[in-house]
Amino acid sequence: MYQWQYLVLKNFIEKTKSDNIIDSCHLALFYALYTKSLEAGTSVFAINTSEIMQMAKIFSPGTYYMKIKYLQEKNYIEYYPSQSTKVPSMVSMKQEVKSEQRRQIHYLSGSTGI
View: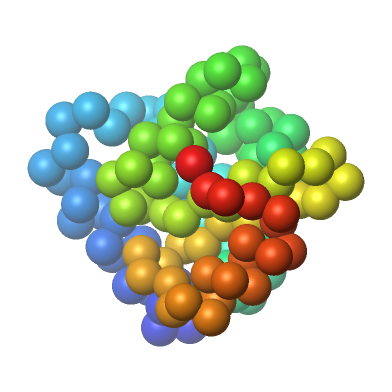
């Protein structure tokens, strides 16, 4: 396991202890995203919404977007939704992304962020 992978999980667990809003759906979504980051071997990776929803056992797109937006707002993840169905959305498990990485993510996803 890479150092960043350990820190992402450790920080997430610590932050959720004081988060009274986070629920099992948020946890399942974060775990699905974390699993994809492990598979990708990087903290910034492309996602397929339907695949993530299936992994997290989320069946409603509205619930998915509400939960991923919350994770973004509370800095558990950085989410860059794609503006095209042909281009995957991007996620960063790190809470801080360097400006050059941010520009590259925006360029690849065609996104302005949430």
